[in-house]
Length: 334
Ligand code: AQP
Picture (cartoon, rainbow, N blue to C red):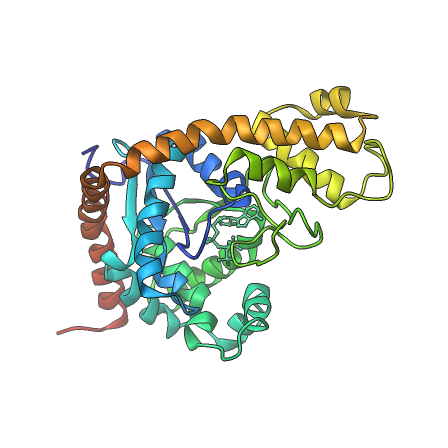
C-alpha cells in the first residue's frame, strides 16, 4: 500500500492522543493541516497511545479510542495510499528511543514545560510518564528524522524542547538528528473553549458546553455553539471584540477558509445570535460529510486493520535504523 518510506523527500510527522473525543480544536489545529500538506511530503501520522497512558485510561475504552481515532484520521482525509497511519505502541522503537533521549535531557528543561504543570495540577498522583511526556514526543519526531511537524499552538514549547534535545544529542555524540521545524495552521492554531474562551479547547475538559466533538450530532453542535460565551456587546466589532467572539469568528474562518477581508465584510456589525447561527451552520455542514465517511470506515474493521498493519510495517525499518544509529553513537550494544 503506497510507496515504501525511502526519505527521498522531507518527512512530516505528527500525532494525536486517543485520550477522549476528538474536537474541532484538534481538527483545525492539526488534522486539516495534515491533510493539506500530506502529499508534499512522506507523511506519518501517529495515534500516540503511549502518550495517552501518561494519565490513567480504562483499557477497554482505550482500545476502542485507538481504532476510532484511526477512523477519524481517514474520515478527515488522510490518504492511506500515500500517508502512513501508525499506532505508536505497535512500533517498539518509540519507547526505546525515548529512554535513550531521557538520558540526555536535563530535568530542568522538563520542569519548565507549561503543559506538564497544567496537567499535573489536575492529577491526584503524578506519574513519571507525565513528566517524561515531552521526551517521548521528541522521540516520535526524531525517530523518523521528520523535517516538518504540523501541530497546534499548544505544542510550540514541546517542539522547541525537541530541537534542544536533538541539538544536545548531536553536540554530545556527533550529527545524528535532523532539526524539525514546526508548522502551524494560518487560522485555527488555538481554538478556545466555547464555555470559557480563556482556556484552550481540550479533550479532557469536562464542562458540557466546552467543546464541539467531531462526532457530535448536528443538534448538539448547534446547541453548544448557540450557548457559547461571548461578551457584553451585542454586535461584532473587530476592533473591540472579546475572546469569545474572536473564537467563534476564528472557528468560522478556519472551516470556511475565508480571507480576513471576507470575514470583516461579512460579519462586521452582525448580532451575536446571527453570528452563532452562521458558525453552527458552517460547522455542521463541514462535519456531516466527515461523520458519514467515519461511519463507512468503521463498518469495515478489516479495512482499518489493513491500514494500521501497513502503517506499522512501513515505518518499522526506518524507526529501527534510527535506534541502531543512536545506540551505535552512544557506544551501546555488542
Ligand atoms: N484547542 C486547540 N486548538 C488547536 N489545536 C489544538 N490541538 C489540541 N487542542 C487544540 C492540537 O491537536 C493535536 C493533538 O493534540 P493531542 O491529543 O495530542 O493533545 P493535546 O494538545 O493535549 O490535546 P487536548 O485536546 O488538550 O487533549 P487532552 O485533553 O487529552 O490533553 C496537537 O497538534 C495539538 O496542538
